[in-house]
Image (cartoon, rainbow, N blue to C red):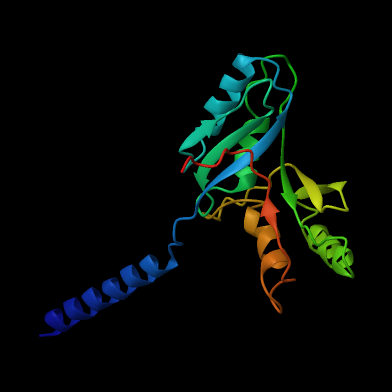
Length: 195
């Protein structure tokens, strides 16, 4: 009888553990992000970068990168791999011309220059200073560029590492008290789908 009770208790414990694991798994968050890439001088550069990025878990496509475009459209699940992990793969791609590639993203906060918004948004940027460097391209229109600092990997962490879009988007876009309630968007070079 004790064996049956012990077996039943173990089965129940395993079922609870499996349910807890299922609840912890984040919902997929597929995105296509434009990474601007400095240092692309030829098609071999673009191929080297594409090969490197495709090794990152969850990447499903790398498109549009050429010397003339200066950007790559990377499709991936940002709940599996971070923007920072994609940027690291770009920066670590085999440099064809002995010059490391430099990835950035661009984003907009259209109401940046209104009222006290600039001070509040700059405070958000400051909190990310250990992961990205944010540079204003046009303060009046709220256009910014984020350059990636070296990725600090936490081997114990299975989730995305380093900077991710939500690190900017949530504190800027979410309504108070969680965020500033401002418009925020990542600049995309993707062409809208034909209707």
